Image (cartoon, rainbow, N blue to C red; front, side):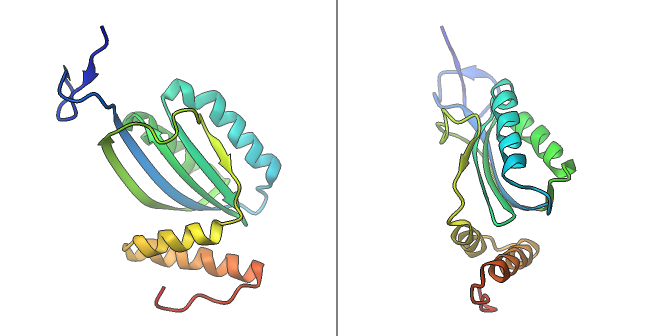
Length: 160
């Protein structure tokens, strides 16, 4: 018999059948030497390690920016975020969301999936729209400005 954790406590129970998952969404600026081979290495390492830690998620990489959604046990995600913060391939990590909730996994089959990055600008604009923390908004604007300069896109208006 398999008992699920009750969503309101750490005790086994029958009150809630969905697992308690910690979700983190962040973006970061990649170091200048990060290329497709480095990203392939990150994905391979994640696919090897994440199943042991109970982590699933997706990674978007494009134009020097990482955008990642991670889900799993709180302790595993916290340990992984510590590793990422000390990883020289990541700079200026911006936490966009940290939520713990009882739900099904969004990425049950993805130990770590690399998603194509054609829309990285749209992803960052969406993050800027919903993140109201001034430090995060400033960092997101800086990432977008760098991205726009590389792509030759028009500058962001000050109100965005």
